[in-house]
Image (cartoon, rainbow, N blue to C red):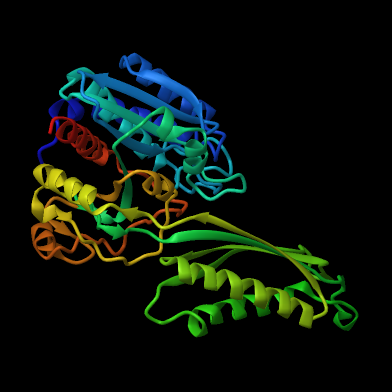
Length: 415
């Protein structure tokens, strides 16, 4: 790998930054400490800082030379509302909040790139460093959408925009992307069932919301199996049921939460329609009332063909063509609200491998890494994945991501 030496030289310090952010996770639109840290570092690099873009968003603007060309780089800053299971020294000090998706690492990758670009000034044009709040699903809304609504691309114009995300199942040093649809859309739902509670010994005198909830969970899955074309991708995931807490009391209410992911607008619309119809009719058939809070959250990330080819070209000069997948298969239903930015400006969303392996072999497959790379097989099957309580970002990939960001800037603005 042809990493930028000046970025590599600072990685011990960058690692300390990342671990400090990890220890102090902040949820969507509450990233005040993280924002203070980001702004302080950008200002120390001599970069102009604008705060409060989309509530807690931060922009760093760096102009060198006289070119009118401009490029945007985005990192997300928020954490997840989950408990951390790690025991290392930099584990979260905030109960119920954790950087379980690597946004701490994304933030520091962009800071590392900004530091290098501000020192080297090896480009002609403007870079907008976009530090975005609230990427994770929350009740308040999308951070990307909030920044755009606050004039992100009118106040801070860019020709194109790029973002990365760590991939916990990929070998460190691997880059993957694709033109066109890169991720799924995501919608969320909160279904509240109002039944009639009572004594567990006399269920015939109640209208048990738990029974209705179980019927709904089963019925929702039939939308995927019986309403969506088998050639289409769609997922309905129920992630929370909140109801009573007694062995002998049938509760009055049950609240079900979850998310729905698709890759096409048509399937997205179909699922919303069938979901609401089934939920309403099944609840009514049991004589219960129900309220449905169905929120359209993020559209699919759609990469621009030209910008994706450019990103792949630059990545290959750093990592080698054998480590870059320019047409990765769509194997999961992850989503990212960077999609809103890609609707506004052409760009590319790509992933970077987060999984370290021993120098000579991948123990999960017993094969030499070079053999895996030659086969185009970057996946580690036993990796600790995103949103798991024992996940942690791999600090060795900070200079990898920062080098790629920096070279994208230099290559684009110097052409």
